[in-house]
Structure formats: C-alpha cells, structure tokens
Image (tube, rainbow, N blue to C red; front, side):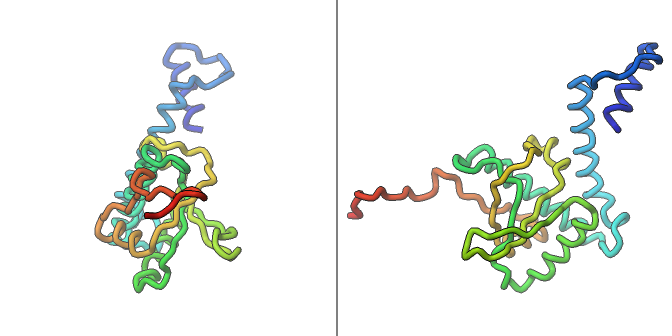
Length: 190
C-alpha cells in the first residue's frame, strides 16, 4: 500500500495522472521499507504503552531494549558467525530463572503488539517441543538485517534476555573464532 501510494504520488507530481502503475521502482521500494522499519522502532519506543492494553510505560521501555539488543546480537552474528550467521529466530533456555514469568509477560505484550510471533516445533534435544520466537521482520531492514526467512535459531538464556530488557545489557555472543576447535577422529590430546 505505502509503495503504491508513493508511486502514484510521484506520477501525479510529474503531471502523469492517467498512467497505470506497471511496477514500483526499486528506489521507492527501498525508501518505503526503511521508512516503515524506522516507524515501527519509533512506535515501540514511544507508543507501545499507549496502544497495547495492559502495557505499562516501564514494560514498553523493557520491550524496546530487548528488541534493540536482539537486533544488535543478530547483526553481530551476521558479521562474525561462520556456520549460521543469518539467524533471526530465538528460543529460550534457563526457564527456571526466577524472572522468567516476567519475561514471558513482556513477550505476550510484544505478541499482542504484533512485533513478535511464536510457534512450537521440535527441539534439537530429545525430540521435545520448544517455543520459537520470531520478531516482526519489518524491524530488520533499518538495522541492516535480512528479513527473509532463515532456518537458523539462537537459544538464549532467560536471564540474559531479562538483563537485556531491564538493564539494557548486551546479549552474549561467542564468535566462531572464540570457540574451541573440535579435535579430529585421530587427533590426540596432550
């Protein structure tokens, strides 16, 4: 809608009212996508508590910080992770953390606001079911992240997500270079 409206406006400003839109120029597409992404971030930061029932100003601030730190983590992974750099989906581990119910409350508010979606799928461990969280993809373009669907998932501890939300603490990331190298089948440990 926004792209089509801009393309129509551009035609009218050039005095071409009667021409049909056959395609929307890439420049218009880029401008609108970045604009909508920016506006979504602004809405989370300044309007979430005014528009989502049951969301306090404090919770809105926490949600903004949480998503901001997720964007930072996903961007860092994109730049420094060799095997699965384009992850934009996360799951939560460490669910025994005392503030886990409070974290879930933030995620429920984010789902009400349609800035977060969730689904259940098989976990990597023991064939159990696990909840996965997918932030709204319109958030990513302005953060220079690829909103196209990826299958990589990041497991994040509840305590780290809570600290990212409430203390604006960066989510931990270990690059591939910092990971210990796996020994080959015939390598010896000295």
